[in-house]
Image (cartoon, rainbow, N blue to C red; front, side, top):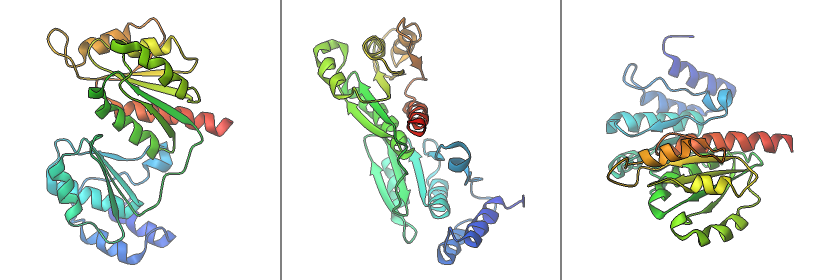
Length: 255
């Protein structure tokens, strides 16, 4: 592979007809060698997982170049944990033919050429204990949808008013897997896992305060669950969305 891997990938896409010359010219012009990240153009084809750029901690100029370059090269670019000022900078100079979809609650920005992810055939249910957990749930939902999963949601149905849970589960009964987000004492994933006959992924959320606050108590409770819950890290909606989408894609492929 040549040293300038990104340029090589762009030229290959032009050769294969996947990228038109005008878009390639604009992309190459925005990629001074040595100033841009080494983009993983083939991650979706190789792993079935979209390349998601973590915006958190990145300087604005670098993030703009990465997002624009990746969108032009692949037709789709996703940034997670993105700040409003970063969004504004990216949208200020969008490349020709690229459109933006900003999901403010989930802190995600999607750039695309208008194409949509191919459906996988599976369904993910995403549940939250409270409204404070929705930001993490939305990250999981968007990532799962970007991987082709259909998603059903039920938000604010936690154990503080557990009567709300049962009609929600009735609506979600066609799902193939459940992602359950909860902060504070983190009880809801265990409750859901004791009521449904499908896999449950618990996502501890950094809500709560005092002793073992900020998601620590929720993480500990989910790890100690007697109801067979798979657990991801605190606030890891991204990871939960990927695992859920990969699982239902297998189900969809074999059905």
